[in-house]
Length: 155
Image (cartoon, rainbow, N blue to C red; front, side, top):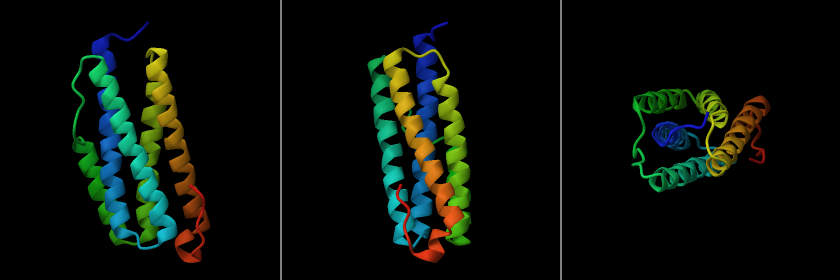
């Protein structure tokens, strides 16, 4: 059964909040990570989340709704946890980012399964692909211990 416009707006705004949450978490991590081979991909990923917010917000406006314009309470908690983890060094900051990306991957997988119109589903699918790439890179960076090797992995 197709989602009502009201339900589409609610679900899209939920994704926007998740992406706002991610931007805050990335800001915290980026500020604490000194190794450019790790910081630079995180800056790129933050840009992906900012684009997600813009693209999803445009859809919400097109549907006649008002996009949310800030992170939710969970986002503030994730940002704080990422900041605290960053104080423990790059490895802990990356572990916090892995946790954040796992949450985002679950959220996007859930929303992709909803009965959105094809054009909206395509945007969600594209964003979900970004989330999968982010998570894979963070996991690779942790496994390779990039902060120790000085060698960068491609995002």
